[in-house]
Amino acid sequence: MKRKKWLCLVVVCFMTVCASAQMMRAFDVKANFRGDFGFGIGLTMNVVDQLDFAPAYNYYFRSGTNAWNLDADLHYNFKVAPLWNVYPLAGITYYRCEKGRFGANLGAGCSYDFDMEWCVKAEMKYQVVKRWDDLFVSIGVSYKF
Image (tube, rainbow, N blue to C red; front, top):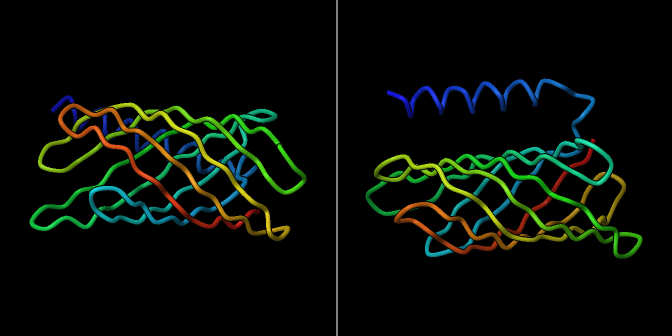
């Protein structure tokens, strides 16, 4: 029962932050590559100057089981060229496969702005979740508001 309460709290926090349109920077769609394949959707919201909050929902195609996770990551952006950003990331995750478990995310990513409204992103992330630790790569696009 405690896990359901925590999950409800995370969802409410996610929805509250998403309701603040002033912070919204981009809507993200991505493909996740690891031991299995998945896709994800998320938001990128500016918190202060170079710091972004990036919540996401990811679904993984696994035979026989449903696997999904909710991520809440922080990105610290470094502009390395006029159209390029790189960022380290850290955050928390709730991973659900056979059982639900909380964990942590550590990684890095980069983005290339090929238009005023669109950018391409790539991330490498290591998820530390009991019995499901995994390293994966995500590639996606973002539409900026």
